[in-house]
Image (cartoon, rainbow, N blue to C red):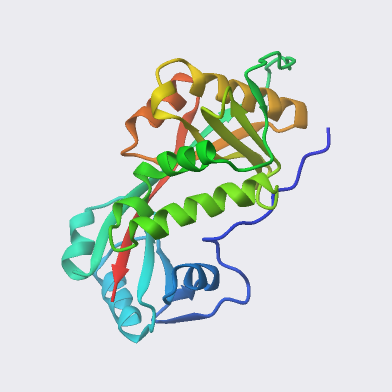
Length: 257
């Protein structure tokens, strides 16, 4: 079957965004983030954390005019070393990608009357997406500010409901659970998923994941992926119980100048 195409969202580098740096370290200027939060924001990725790499990063940071830089470190190692050599770097998140295959599974027809598509925002959904981000780096970094954090997740919801950054938004019951579905690198990508505090422990999250699996098979996807925070134990346990496996992780630091 024909696969759906995913629309792009913020926090991803665009081709025309500016790059500055030294000694092979490139700091990418993030135009959307900067405009949304009101100060200059950049991003940089390092694959290792040797002393030489970190010293080169330190030089690049010194030449950057960004107020905040997201540092993504894909290599495992001693995180304290980064914070020691770059005191302004504060660990905020370990992003973990979980993946599940649909190959060999029989396609079923969704008969869950509790789950239906959503197109309009309301106060319950706004409250729900704010809860969904409780483990995100934009919440844990208090310098971002509570108002900016909430505004960010509410914008994410609105863009999802308009289908500008995903292809489907489904809610459970009376807006007590939410899942957004789209395409990323040939996989079905779960962008947002969460259950209201008052409805947790009732199997709602499991039903939403089962719906995602049925949706993936119907659209012809062989894999489903979802990204969460390693410190979000309930979400991690939910994905493992549902048959997902950990594919990769990246440690994220925020560097305020």
